[in-house]
Image 1 (cartoon, rainbow, N blue to C red):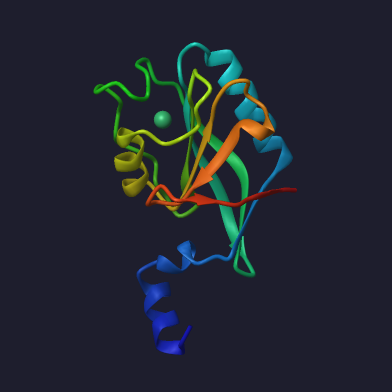
Image 2 (image 1 turned 90 degrees about the horizontal axis):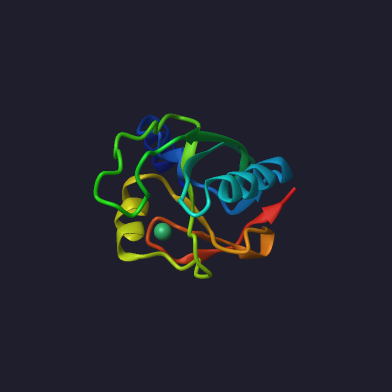
Length: 142
Ligand SMILES: [Zn+2]
């Protein structure tokens, strides 16, 4: 990236979205699995907190909000705590599909650049990651 572009990115705080690799901490994965299980058969939604170090996005915390309604229903609160350390979202699907729904894609687009979906049976292998456009992306667990 050129110097000017980098400076503009920093000014607009877009630099926080520039990364090559994604790392998610093991404790975040465990908490995702725990929330998915404890909310089942309802869905849960949380926000992914982290930092960028050497072009690596490191997710090391969750911001959990308890929603009364299911994530896919119309009454979900869209006021999200998007701050400097929030990079995206995680939500659970009570079934066996972790593909994004149409509503998910609209939601992804507005809420950061990394979106996880966990489906049954709620383990590491049933978690998929997507970018803001709903394209599947890779992540590593550290
Ligand atoms: Zn969904």
